[in-house]
Image (cartoon, rainbow, N blue to C red; front, side):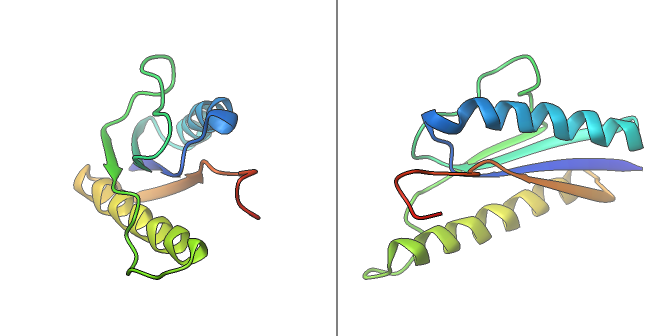
Length: 116
């Protein structure tokens, strides 16, 4: 059995340390279920990226353009469209890496700039 941990969302300086911890925690939990674990990261190209090394190594990493919504869309519409696109790309990458189970972790737990 191969498990893919899927990490998706927008990274921000204020939440980057939480994102790195989520990567480590998800891998540790997945490894308690199976020894064959791969990780996938798909994030928006606005803001920082995960640092290399430690727990932030990935079998697949991808950035998405920020505006995946139609002109005139609200900020919330853009966030939702980007979130679904990132998740779809992460699942596709996990399948491409041969995962039979997937475990998703979101990065953006709280972003002050938005009422989320």
